[in-house]
Amino acid sequence: MAATSTESSLTRFRAVVEGALAHLEARRQEVNDLNVFPVADGDTGDNMALTLRACLAEVELLANQAGGHSLDEIGRTEIVERVARAALLGARGNSGVILSQLIRGAAEELISRPGELVDPVLIGAAMARAADRGYGSVREPAEGTMLTVMREMASCVASELAHMRDPRLTPQASADEQNAALADILERAIRAGEESVKRGPELLPALKEAGVVDSGGYGVTIIFAGIVAALRGSDGPPLEHHHAPALLHSHDDHHSETYRYCTNFAVTGEGLDRGRFVAPLEEIGDSLLVVGDAHTLKVHVHTDEPSQATAIFDGHGVVSHLDVADMHEQVQRRANRLHARCGALAVTAGDGMRTLFRSLGIDVLAGGATINPSTFELLAGIHAVPADEVVVLPNSPNVIMAAERAAELAEKVVVVVRATSQQAGLAAGVALTGERSAAENAAVMGQALEAIRIGSVAPAAREDRQGRFVIGDAVGFVEDEIIAWGDPRDTLAAVLTTLGEDAELITCIAGDGAPLDHDAVAVLAPAGVELELEDGGQPAYWWLLAAE
Image 1: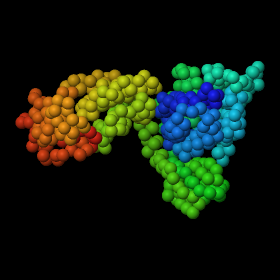
Image 2: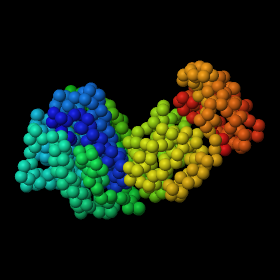
Image 3: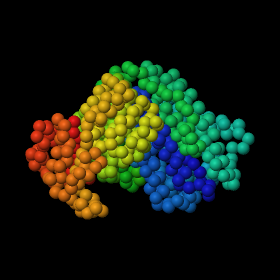
Image 4: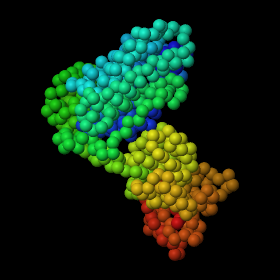
């Protein structure tokens, strides 16, 4: 957590959270694949990322409310309390809940020292309190896990401070001096954390048996590397990669003995006593965590009866943020992921479009009405694809640069196929096979793109300057050229006729609000051309067309 000097702003604080999350997203799948302890508990990388995303969302909200004011003007207490609560509510799984407690512990230390500059000494105290909070949240702490890593990182900082001639910063320290001091002490902590991660299998037999390090502990070092990167405005310190062995099956020997559902929810009320709920929850599940305060509790439990878990709180508070994950399915997905070679990610808009891409075995990322996801969202989508290599279909010219940047940042082999529309992406996606490499798939998919012509019909969003159409009229395109306008039926017919020249097949995908049904469209097919009709539900376009 960055600074509180008068030169510092909420923007710098936000950069630290963004850096931590970006680093974790870049290795999220790698962290997921390591998860074996204590049971197949969801996906550790996903769960930790959800916690940080909740923190970032709260920081974004604070930034909007602050209007660019410094942290001092907003109030450190309000900031850390709100971020800590957001982490708690956004947490999922053992790893996410424990991470939320590490954040809460650090926040408590920051609150306890109002007006004190955030320097190496305060960072050391915050890390120590975070470690204590983490251990206190677990009924039976296991060594070799993220708890150990956090404690040993905090211990390293304490030792370094003891040997520093002047560990404190004066109020006159510049923002650059402050960032440099914090980054330096945290990088030393990261090195200690890496050593702790490597020692984990010696402390925890389950890790040694599986041939992996602890996923949560590894995730903690990644998060801190992201913080250092943000403080320095660089790529951050390098971290050793820890990949799961090819035959890892997430402890299938005990998987059948565990409960099925990883259940997470929040409870808000007055006078909540977390201790009174532990026994009834343990009667229906295990891997229990109940953390929080008298006003807000976060519950994590593995159970076969999620509804019974929430029912325990009837009359005590309001249940919200309910999340139930089928751990059996997650185990299978992880096993499939560790054996897959190449997958694909398509940026989409429209429920039907998502279904069409998924029918081809392609993962999807919702691009919104304008199909314009951020690099960060693309990176997260890439790492969620269950394969070591990924082909990305941007499906919009506006997404290509962001997709290529995400490909550069990804810890996988990623190739971007420059599909500029959803209908083109579908045509290319048909050529995907999981056995080929990403480069091989991209080459074949590129050839498929060269063999098609695309068209579309959309309602005009504004009047034409040349007077050809007004708002609401149909406008027909072949590639990027307007070829027809006016009545929807006539405009679609003109586009079909143009595309039908030398074509054997035209795929026509109906969008949201299309004014003609499939039967009315079918009769417009050019002679000798097969017309394949689909429902895409895409916004903005009544019909998307591809001719082969």
